[in-house]
Length: 89
Image (cartoon, rainbow, N blue to C red; front, side):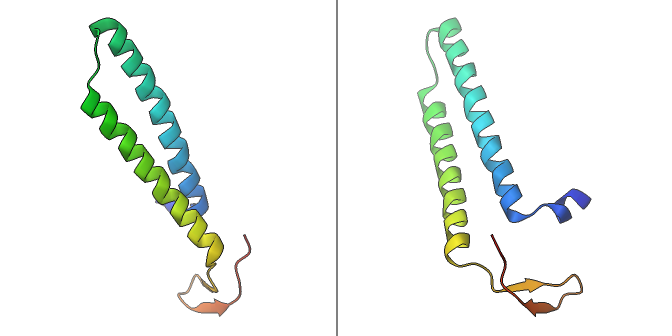
């Protein structure tokens, strides 16, 4: 529970992108091995997997761009109130 409190949105998105890259590399390696052993690969699974990774990466990119275009103007205090200050990137 403590790790989620310390995790900022940017760090979380970086972890998501790292996870996507690792899963794409490992999936590609497994499909290459599957091709050499079986002589064929499941085309629908491959198409769906890479489509999901593209959508997830695109959504992450949209979130990052939106945060840079429209930065938050208010930051929440730990007691629930808000302060008038701009967040620096």
